[in-house]
Image (cartoon, rainbow, N blue to C red):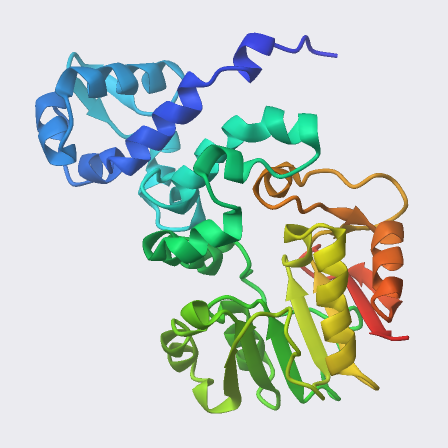
Length: 327
């Protein structure tokens, strides 16, 4: 086994330098031909000497290159930072990505207390902080659209049989990217998007550009309130892991009520197969007290909510899917 380099693993300078470079748009400036440090600093509105120190650290780590003194350029690793998508959103410090980066300073408190530490760091619980800061919530919604809640594929079912599915409710579906892709893939299906009013208000453009606006209804509400009833499928995509057991049970119970007697509740994300302890979930532990669960743990939670696990398996993309029916 290779020796573990704890100095490298514990390095904080490199991840913060990358985030600073992304936030200042350094890679985009270089892609436009701005390469000399003084010009880069003017374009990024920052101090030239300080920026040079950051970039030289990254050059030493294999990100960017310095072909001549005081002149920097993109290399293969740095070109990724020019591409739009979820990576840049996660690394950008002026927005939701910055909040997440800062939240990690509360990891010790979360481990010591067994409770989310976001409020200790920022003064408000996570969801209340989003509600109190419109710019932050817009940044969060954009990140979920680009690569968080939404996934590049339509929603998946274990048997991939959509013939008898006519109405899908996307619970906590953000601005509707996943639901739009699902309706495009299945022209006979209509959908309902459920999320907070400030979030679903941004869905019109998503559904219109996908050409499915005539088959979508929108319900701006908390998903802890009664859900639109009588649909065939209720989707929970990367949602359940955001919540500790008590609110997660309440959420599943709302789905069970709405799905009864013949609907399905489909959980995509946050559940792992088998009986071994689920891995991951450190971020939600800090932010909200949420957790990932193995299939046994999820089954116990579902039973409390009035659901039984009817099927589970991997989607074509490899994601693990669990389907429940009202008990």
